[in-house]
Each structure stands twice: as structure tokens, then as C-alpha cells.
Image 1: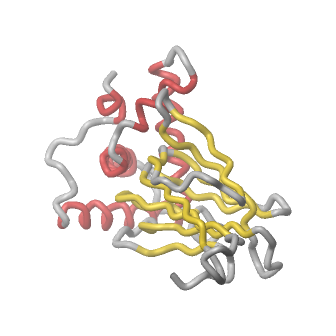
Image 2 (image 1 turned 180 degrees about the vertical axis):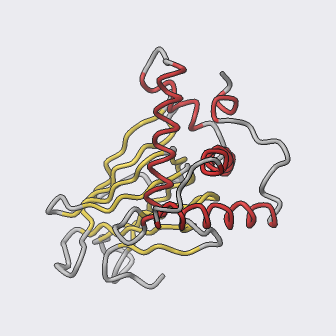
Length: 222
């Protein structure tokens, strides 16, 4: 792997909205070059529901773990952060040794992968921000309607669904919403609708768009 100067790197995939992999490097000592990640905040699937992780150097767990739907935030030592939206996927944390076999690693690499795009929510990526905002709204409305007995119950059920199924369900709902939405006065929404149509066409071409699509409520099983 070519180590990025910024401490993180996004790997483009086929999606029109996001990437297929993100690597984040956590070092014992900052490089003081650009962005130096200090911790990663995310949610993973646990034995009972979900669990929040604050990944820092050093980190002992290296097994691959299931990532939950939601926001991933990468903070530096000045509390600036990078925001990434995930539909779920996998998280693997590896220690990178330097020097001899007995040398202690001075950094770890957090590798995040998914079959659904990872959305980099930066100022220059307005369509990805709009997509993440729309999905946040869908999830909040569904959470309120289902009214789970425990806060982690909804996230736990969502964590049991394949990321691509969640993604397709959300895109299907957004296509309905934007078909009847007057958006041509808004350049960002116009670009978003164009990308939405391109993305659905890509998934159809790849046989990843089922003939019958379940809503999020149906996927969760309520």
C-alpha cells in the first residue's frame, strides 16, 4: 500500500456517489503534515445490538468486524474531522511493523470496505452530502415510526441487513421522491438527480438492482 500523506486514502469504485474502500492511518506520533488522524469513531455490530468504537493508537483487536450503517468520523489532534457515511461493511485493523521482527509498530491501519459506496462528506462533494442527508432523514423517520423499546434495537436490526440491500432500498425511495420534486432551480439537486439515475442504471446493468425492492421497514422486518 502506498501510504497517503494525509493519513487517509479513498479508493474509487464503480459508484457515481462514493468509494469502495477507505484506509486511515493512526500513528503514535503525528507527522505534522496536513491531516494527522488521532482516532476514528464508528459503530460496529456486537453480540447484542451495536457498539460504538473509538479506535486509537495502539489498538489490540485486529480481526475483521462488521461495520454498521451510519457516520464514520476521523478526528485529528485539533478535533478537526473527516465525515464518511457508510451503509455498512467491514472494518479491519492491522498493525504495521517497521524495522526488525521484534520492532514495535508505530502505526496502525484501519481498512474500511463495503459493497455499497462509502460517501466522503466534504465541501466539494455536494451530491454525496445530499445523499447522506436524505438517508439520515429516512432513517430518523423510520426510527420514530417504529419506536423501538431500546435505543440500540433499531441499529441492531439495521446491522443485520446487507449494505447493498440498504443502499438499493434508499435509492429506490429517493427516485420516487425526486421524480415528483421540482428541482431544476437548484443546481445541486439537478446534479444529484442525474447521478441518481446513472447509479440506478449502473446497478441494473450489474444485475444488482432486484425486480422487487423492499422498503427499509420491510427489510428491518416490521
